[in-house]
Image (cartoon, rainbow, N blue to C red; front, side):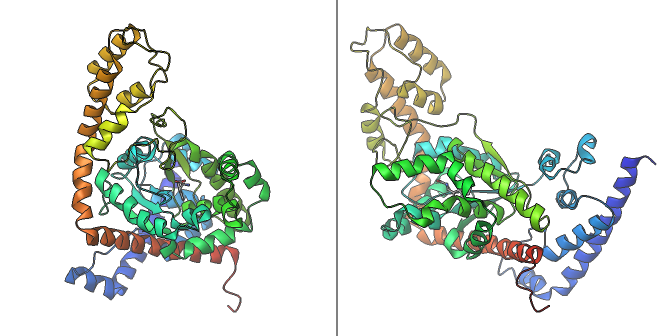
Length: 432
Ligand code: TRP
């Protein structure tokens, strides 16, 4: 038997043991069985019950196998043999293929969502939700970091964000929609991680730096909570022990920091966290309708997902185009022109876009025609989203149900992680 075969055999034995343990637990947990039979409450089985996981890791250690590696096997992934025997926790991400990963990503509830959110984030989330166990976080604590004076706005936005998520097709039966403040473990883990996060991590984070500059420009008070929000975002990601974080480009520094802190924790106290990887979408990001890189409601340069047909038309007519082109017979520039960036992102009729670009370059089309076609394409795209949003606006209880169910689901996992964290650190068991 060669080495790989030999290792496989060990894993098989481990699996048998785990299955036996699981079976025992299933028998013991009468209440779950009862709940299942009565059909009163959906039973959520993340498949990684903490005790079983710990036991599995323990067995792995006894057999000299990387405990992380065993975690992955638990979700039955396929591991290429060449990678199989490497023992670097970071590498473990590469071994995970075609498997159900845990995904966490989130948004601050600071207003209804717009086309920029769709291109930069939601489109990717829609792609990952089918193959993975997803947690979509409404980070209301993070919103407080610079909106503490507008709690009413945050409250409204929690519902708006959830409705927009539903409207674009995120499915609360597949994915958990979670409210950060309803899971106190977010705050607790933030505090624990703050003790192993160096100030220089925050000093170096370019996203934080640029946001600090923005606050300064608006002469907004910079709070302690704002300075340390990256730590809370690290906790957001590590709390469900996420493997994958689909985000917009601007969030990459936070993911880098998360990887750093996860490694540090694992090294200092024992392996609890997978090292998460970021996934950025293919089209990166949209620009504002004024051509600006930053998009925001306060900048009045966005088209909201809930905008009416008429609003969409009006906003498109106001869009910034090539400023050097005065007459429709002047040759125009397509590159970097918001009109064409939006056409490329939302107009499914590629021939039409090619044709418009060609005529724009050669001065054979007026801005109005390009804009009218864009408004039509956007309205085509937004039609179903608008319809679905109206459906949920009329049924706020469905939205609340989705939020409650999702939050409950994350809370189970959060408790489990916090227990693992405290066990690893050796705290909260001073009297054992
Ligand atoms: N910082 C993100 C934003 O500005 C929101 C967020 C909070 C987040 N927690 C997260 C994103 C965890 C990804 C992962 O929208």
